Every structure is written in C-alpha cells, then in structure tokens.
Image (cartoon, rainbow, N blue to C red; front, side, top):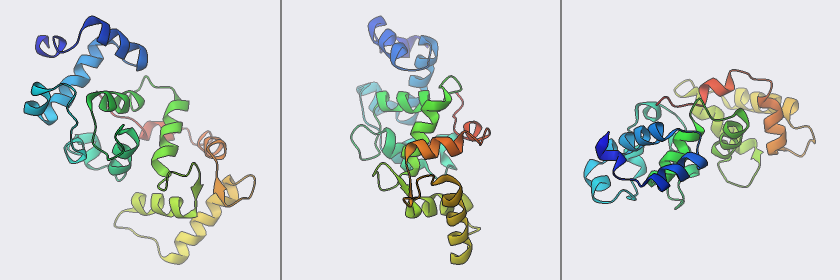
Length: 184
C-alpha cells in the first residue's frame, strides 16, 4: 500500500475524500485497482487516461450490458476513457456508501442513450434489449413492454420520462439499488 499512498499528497487524499463516499484507505484501494488495469501507464503518470476497454476488464463490468454507457457517463473527456478521478467517481457512485438518490441520478444518465435529459421509447428499448441479452423480445413483445412502462411511469403523458418520473418509478423498486453497485 505504501507505493500507492506516496502517489498522493495528504491534501489530495483529503480532497478526494470530501468529493467521494470513500475513506482515505478506500481511495488508496481504488487507486490500486486502477493501477492494476495498466501498471506501466499509471506508474508513469497517475493522471493517465485508460481506454474504456481496459476498464471493461474489471470483473464487475466485464459482464455488465451497460459497461460502455457507464464509461461514457463517467468519462470527463466524453470518449469513455477514464482518468483516475473519473474512475474514482464511478467507483464512489457504485459503492455501498453512495446514497440512493445519487445512484438513481447516474442510472438515469446511463439509460439516457441519446443524452437528451429524457428517457424516450428508443432509450427504453435499448435498455430492455441489453437486459434481455440473447433472449430478445419480439417487436410486439417489446412494444407492449415499453407501452406498459410508459403507461405506469409517464405521468405527464408526453411520451418521455423526465428524471422526476424515473425517480418515482425507481422508488417503487427497492431491489434496484442492489443491482447498481461495485464491490471494493
């Protein structure tokens, strides 16, 4: 651990602690996980940006159907590649310590494929497609499912879900938070 703690000043660790849901020890552990993804690059420059494909090799993301969207949402450069700070933000949001409202906010961003601030039928179809994997729904089944979701969730009937509408639906799904986490 001594190697990674020397990478940061006490001031940097304190700042990271204030900006995340982690203790200093957890921040150092997250840095070790980041460093393992590309030891040479990170050793040469702790601010290295790692390609999203490297991030996808994390066991928690390897099988996640939204791994590309997760990296896109947390990438400060917008290309899906992550710096350590981006990685730390991602790990913090997915940690058990992050509050439910933060997890819901980021889930909304992940599911908002066109990044327009709303979930429309196209976004929801992509979510369902990714969740069903090889068990693809027929066009009729997909339409019925998305229509049912909108009937339940689209309170203002504008054919798109605002964040408030999404948050309202998620509040009825207590298991949602359990699926939106990464273990340290």
